[in-house]
Image (cartoon, rainbow, N blue to C red; front, top):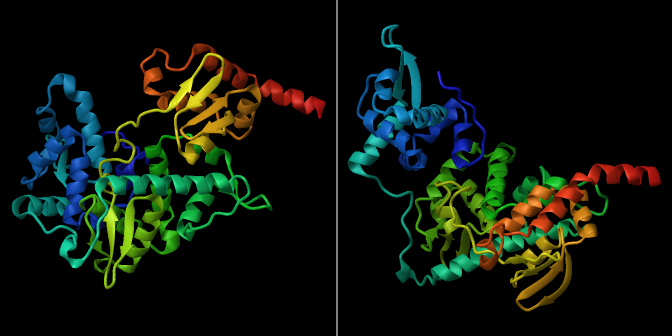
Length: 402
């Protein structure tokens, strides 16, 4: 029997961690079944489609015959995934046949229905003739970026003792579960995890927020399965189209307000109706938040003399650089910094590691630097690692001096 261990690293791992009852409830939705199917590894999709119209259990030995010898490792990965998601159930018909697999009946029935007769989309977009003025795709992408940057800037400002404003109580709980601490009498402060969060890739940051938002759903009297179902439904909406808010439940409308804080949707109000417009962040949810977008072009140039130049107009990027570098001056489209011993120790004191700093610099290297090998000067990398390795001795020295 395959070893099944569920670790929620992406959206489908979160789905796999649900109980059997909640998973079966999720599979009652035809479109959720399709979203789950298209998230599977290629070999797992093949198994599902081959067994889709077979009602009897199929021996595992027979399924193994469908794979060439050099594909057994991919076969095991596919079977593990199907069992995690309870798409495959294991049975033992007799000793001769051994272990057999059969499709989850609820999943099988709804996927058959969807393939044979298609289905109605979760909701139809609103008629553009109703006086609705929609933003262009470029404007929508700009809006999503601005919302996300504003969201993270509030988190950084809270680390300086300022209170978070304009953020829903649901999102506040997400922060307080690991990114913010209320121990300081002057207000919330960033924890070590909070500082590390700011250096993460955007997709990893977004997945962290969504994962925690789902995890504490029951504290808001929301069924996690219902929340996951709605988030997956969003992936079937068309980016840039308007959808009527009156077609949603109260819980779904509340969820959309929280998602608007992140830039996943844009909310608009008309004379009679209200509607929401999904951005690419929302329509890519079922793919995988960890893999959904293409790597963005970098903006940081690191020199051998420890000076750093960031070609950016973003206030957020400036504040992130300030976490481990000294800002010397700013021009309209350029931030000049220096990585110093003091700035690195300050970063280490806040819980940021040398690996996180180097990874951040590599991921955000300007195209002219990214093509070099290595993209970050070796003396800079060596110095960052050396200072971090000497951190324990520095702590001991400070203890003796105190």
